[in-house]
Amino acid sequence: MKQIIATALFIAATAMPSFAGETAAPSDAKVYFINIADGDTVSSPVKVVFGLSGMGVAPAGTEKDNTGHHHLLIDRAAMGEAEDDADMIEYGIFADDNHIHFGGGQTETSVDLAPGTHTLQLVLGDLNHVPHNQPVMSELITITVE
Image 1 (tube, rainbow, N blue to C red):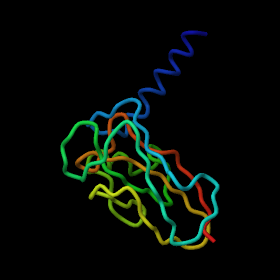
Image 2: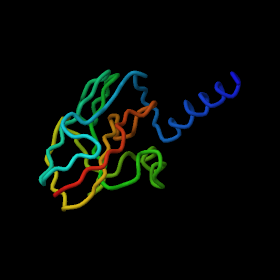
Image 3: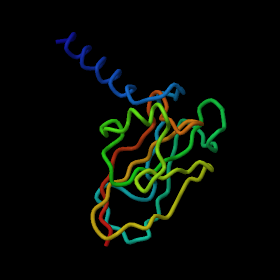
């Protein structure tokens, strides 16, 4: 039984970094939503405030240990579950309607979302927009916009 648990823990620990870059992150680093939660009903524009603990925020291009900048993923699979995640490790997180960059070091935003159900996830990127190794990302949350 102990070997099964040890094997499961090893698989869990090594699976997540498969979509991580080379920049190290502290094991206790966390990114999270401050003002919204899974299941919330909100109105548009949606104010989103980013929380971060265990690391600092620095603009994209800044090479400093234990820092990164925020990315907001909208209406896409959770990081680590999407087909294009491997490309983001090589080239950095894309910038499009589903991947919003905050390379200036911003810690909040207001997003216009159409009425309906939407998913949101925060992912911290390194100086080159690549997820850290160990990825620092929030849970994928679902909100409803009225």
